[in-house]
Length: 264
Image (cartoon, rainbow, N blue to C red):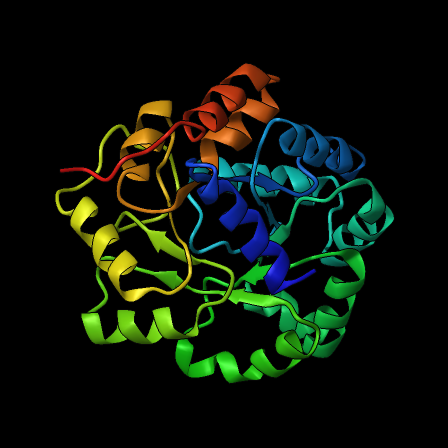
């Protein structure tokens, strides 16, 4: 489990000529009793890894759709402890890697060692902590490493090359390439230079590079997939799940399962 579980899942997809597809869902949106079924649906539909958001009162990286999902989850009484307990109960019913996306305050209050230990027990393979900068991550790395939990770092298009090189060197599992200058949320088009930015990260990175923030259509999945190893889709997945539009999710996942060639 852990880092190797993520690596094996992504490499298996890439070796088949496809791209990795990581859907983001908000734990507790619609009730935690639905979480196991949501994970099962995404796994059976062909997702590579699942990114599972933990609701938080001040989600600085999240756009309106995910913020609203977080509010719904909090109103349902969702807590970090309850999410980990739910994942532990359903651990044997899934084989897909699980990555938690959470903010550092929740982990700090919970207890870093306790968090890492319970993540391992619950079958969590990695974590994304968007408000934990490189300069402060020593507070979390020892506990996560001890329990084989990958710390997946985020790269931003506004970062200088020297910092991107340091982020790439430290990331585990995969590199989360943020493709926009802003928060999460569906976008109809990307800013100029995204393809070059993703290809630069690919040239620097020894682990897969996945593009996220703003990916919302099958066309974007295909377009971005030409320049990296896969995509992460959040707001569109959250929206489709809440409205019962599973066919939209299947279209997005299917867009990643085609033979890709390097652009000329």
